[in-house]
Amino acid sequence: MNKKRWTILGIIVLVIVAIGGGVYWNMSHSVAKKVPGNTYLYQSASKDKSLYVTFAKSGSQVVVNSDKNTAMNAGKSQAAFDKEYKAQSKQASWNYKAEGGTLTLAEETSDGKVSQWQYNGILATNSKFTAHGFTYQIAKAGQGQVKSKTVFEKIS
Image 1 (cartoon, rainbow, N blue to C red):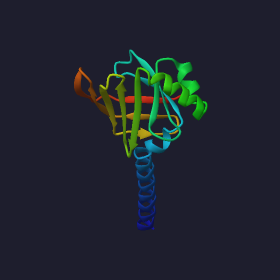
Image 2: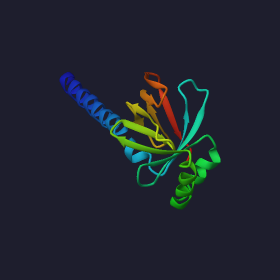
Image 3: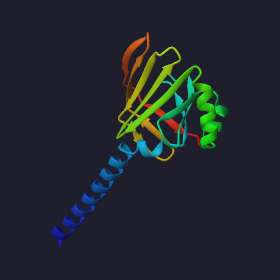
């Protein structure tokens, strides 16, 4: 009887580990499915600046703004997004690429300078996604790596 209990306990532990591993794998590979058409609040690694990031429902464009109303408006419809993106593009155009557990945001200014941020080790849920670090390359300012957690909190 004792051997039967250990066998049952072993099977239960195995099922729990398998389910947990599947959930973790899904969270670490789903950022590309979660971001399109949504608006997120981003706080800088030092927590002193906030930006709102609205991803296009289709395509690779992003509206990045410090004004919540602009970001929320961009998320209302494709026409509203296009209007806000066009207004933003006079100064800079933003694009993104999401793949596996990585999200790359790129900004190209009107004078052709490109900066980009690559968020790595992302775990995505329906309400937020968390990167465990990011690398950056900023035009005329250099490049580097930040190893602190960065959270993008969904607001729409």
